[in-house]
Length: 112
DNA sequence: CTTACGGCCCTGG
DNA sequence: ACCAGGGCCGTAA
Image (cartoon, rainbow, N blue to C red; front, side, top):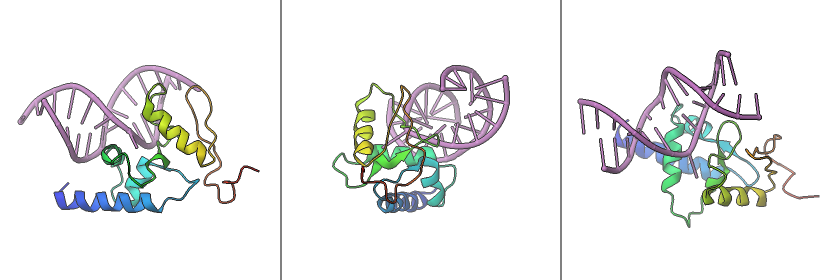
């Protein structure tokens, strides 16, 4: 991939990210696909990894294709993501943690 | 439910 | 040029 393509890819990823709303979640592969680079899921991960910790982008809304957080449970990165997702209405369960099945909330953000 | 494998494609040593 | 290692993915057992 040329540098220019990378730049494009990068900006597309950030754009897509900025467009994912509260209560939604998207997979790495899906982001790559929408960005016009199917198969570049791992690159998406690498980009997110470099985001400044004070970023406004909702990096936590990106999970793997199995709807699981892609961090080991013991890590703090895992904890940060989990906390954020729970704040947005997601239910995270089990030792291996799974995200709630029913897609984007739409009307779900409100607890009751 | 779980692990194992092959394929994926950039980074950094 | 080589190689190892990732915020991955799909399939198969």
